[in-house]
Image (spheres, rainbow, N blue to C red):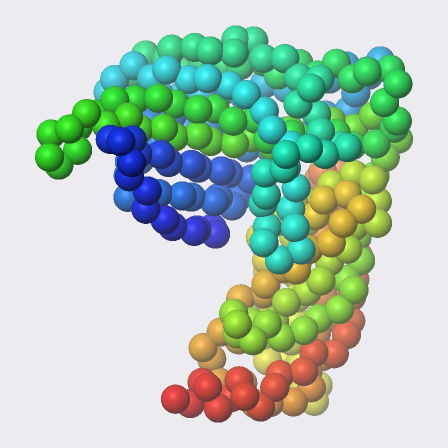
Length: 280
């Protein structure tokens, strides 16, 4: 789980944003409040038929009070280094073609409600993938430590991918390098296909024929016709002798009945400065 934290308080208003995608989340303002509504699933992939596609999300109120929820969508992407990003506009934006049923709802404590996502693509749209993050925004009022009225805003995002025509993912590893800031090995994974891939990585690091470390990276979204650096969470603070290592493994993506795999094998150099910093 990836987490970024900030604090914001203005005019008795506290805002909290929660985004989930493929077993990962971006959380802002975690100290303000905990989300009172859970959402599933966090990723929906659909194939458009005659320009139409549908999805369904389930919202569950985990609090002891009624929750008011508003549903809306925005374009997004995953950048090479910064990960999830909301966009102002995108040629692959699905949101203009999305309808929600219902768009606003109240959920009683302990109960669940379903929201249907209905996509109607314009006939003039070219074949390809169209995507949006569907936010489920919850508004609740409470009091802070000083007794002031506070409005809590929590929003959980579900990524919705709709494919028009026969499009698919095509992943390769461009290179492996050492991220000096994170002190971790990173893979630059490129998607030359026209459909986003939710990919996992199985990897093994060797030197002189000896296995140094093997691992598995949880699934990450690689946007269509884009690339992304994936951190392998190694070596971190572990002591690793500087030099050239061999990194092998495979990218894995797709449904269980249509699993795709792409092996890779390349060298990665661990710089001398890493070992020096680890001995401090």
